[in-house]
Image 1 (cartoon, rainbow, N blue to C red):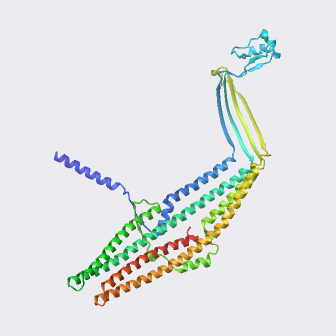
Image 2 (tube, rainbow, N blue to C red; image 1 turned 30 degrees about the vertical axis):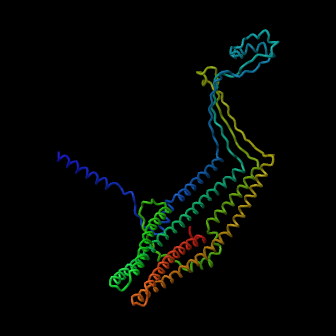
Image 3 (cartoon, helix red, strand yellow; image 1 turned 120 degrees about the vertical axis):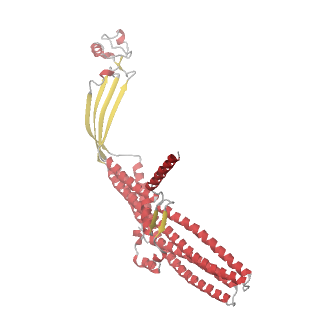
Length: 478
């Protein structure tokens, strides 16, 4: 029994190990630069994927519209079983020999019986005899053909469908740009949070040394207990701030992965560093000197231009409704009829025709002319919107440039303040150690440094975000 248990356990362990080796891990690890994150988003973000599907749908729409001008062939099949066949009243002027003919052909009267060869005695006084010429069973099989020879609305609609496809392609570009902006900003947020943790670590390490020295001095009776308490409070606050930032850093990574369309459980590390990002005034200066017609690079302007063309094509389509249309049509069919279901398809009666139909619009109660006037107004409004968009984009670019310059100056100022705060803290510590300063000065200097660090981090993030907005405003993100 022990041998059997050992053998079973051994083979189970081997099986589990083999399964574990063959099963791929659920989570993946990626190490991306900001551009690689953007490329990943262009392939995996839901909004981009859906925009790509809209492009495919637009391609099918073009094919659908093209198909309207191709031959339209339809097959028809029908079967009728008359419980009561329709009848007509046969006038008495045909009395006499005609009743013999009807009798020989087996034509039935309204009572369902074959008409007698001898007219009724009262035929001269009756309005006529009810006769049915319809067989009990009827069936038809046929094909119909319709082909547009000329239709102005179709020709304009074909151009409009291609423009609609172009519109969907530009919408895809705009979605990719939005994804690039969102991913880049989220990427920078992670870098800034990481820099903030490093600053906190440096302050914590520095404050820990100061705390240890103050505790030792207190034990020797050189400083009071309140000095130890002040530094302890600051130290605890820094530890808490660091823990909060670490939790925010985890959240920022998740936001970045969400913007990329990456599973939240996947592991992502960043290649780029803050030092690799170019932030200087030359970027804003170049925007003013070289990008005088930058709005043509903006996808929003291109989308608006395409929308203007669509409205103008709709106006042409409305006007083409005044033109005649010409179509070719044809049909071929086989008709079957018999009073016996078993013999219904023994004999067929074929019919075939081809023809041309010309439709000339004459009067529609003013509908067409009013539709044209509405389309004219819509086209005029779209051109006004295009002009207004140009001004709006220019204003947005100027605002982005000024915001970037202000953010850059604020960042440089915060860097200087940070350096000064570090120097003040250093001098305050020396004075305190030499007995010519107080612990309150050191505490205030430490607080000022922490405030300068926080403002530097905020200024750094604002400058990075304003750089992204500036690039987007001047159409540099494609």
